[in-house]
Length: 471
Ligand SMILES: NC(=O)c1ccc[n+]([C@@H]2O[C@H](COP(=O)([O-])OP(=O)(O)OC[C@H]3O[C@@H](n4cnc5c(N)ncnc54)[C@H](OP(=O)(O)O)[C@@H]3O)[C@@H](O)[C@H]2O)c1
Image (cartoon, rainbow, N blue to C red; front, side, top):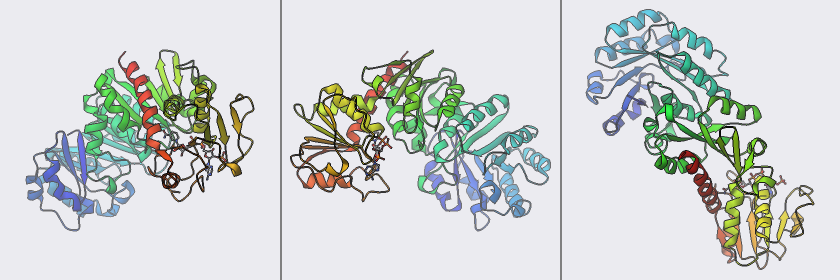
């Protein structure tokens, strides 16, 4: 078993279909059962490995800890007798050594579990105590809090050499640690059959592992690692976008979402993952990424102060801003010499303005907060007061504010379309149809949604990554 489905009482019926997939086994979460299961029927439902778990509340389960020695132990012994392959015991259970010995005598493997639900203060001690036991598989689960958790994860795997260890960090921002645990030699990682009803935050789906990350195809010694870094990063579309094309170059390519919020996190990632060959960079890391660049892939990105792509080759760090490069392509479709109004002058707005300058296009910058636009952008660039954003005089509006982004779908940066406007380029892609897009369509203005820029920049970025993955 490399993928363990954690199933509650209401999900037991899913065994019949999940059974058909390779490398799967099933954790039966006994603490969620309202009545004792029919053990023989459960055992007969699959010839895949079965794990019996009585998860107590301090370990993120539903059972009171005091029931572990009574009903919880009785049920686990019944599972052992019925031929379950693995039995879970918690590190803080009474008579731990006796329970471990009884399970092993019954010819099942012991999974010794510990869960840290706070700041991971006790995790090193738990790891040390677990290493001192005779359990077959040690399962030490932390709560993802900081990038340094990923460094600790790798360190624990180094220190556990020779012992079977399942060790990762919960939480959507740390889902990558569930993939990494397999690459570090972990026995298995958990999957959920239903992402909307996970028993622990961040659980992966079979689609994630079979169609996106494919961790079992990666040779850890030859791994070519890529990552999107930023905070938040858990909902990034980048792993789904980049893994497929990179794996066409080599099955040893892997693209993960790794959390990073500051310079120290950046250094932690570089230290922890010497395999990193490329990064897609998102907020708030774009300026930090720029400061780490030793060279630029194009002349325009070097003026920006922020980049969204880094490529590592030895000591060399090559940088690019593919938002800028994709915008240049998009604006080429906007007819001859359009005048472009850029709403918003944050990270993306700046890249779009640079794209206009690179293309020799007249550009008006219109930002809600005045005084953020430098004077030295050239004669083709002018500043327009926010109050004047509906004025005639623009052929294209590129919407670079966060106004209208989920969960504020009702907000629009424009109340009406400027007269004579031909094209609205939206950059928000969540939601895919924003209020301002609907208004533009109703006014007969051509519209490009946020996926046009996302896909354009990701395509350019992926070409950079593929080139470096092939080396
Ligand atoms: N499609 C893509 O590939 C792609 C790539 C990158 C970003 N984006 C999208 O682009 C947007 C901006 O990203 P960013 O990185 O530039 O963010 P950022 O650096 O935080 O800048 C945010 C900008 O939005 C303005 N703003 C925020 N709320 C506003 C409101 N209610 N009304 C008017 N202006 C408002 C800010 O103006 P102030 O200066 O007044 O605060 C600022 O100019 C986000 O929605 C993001 O989803 C899309």
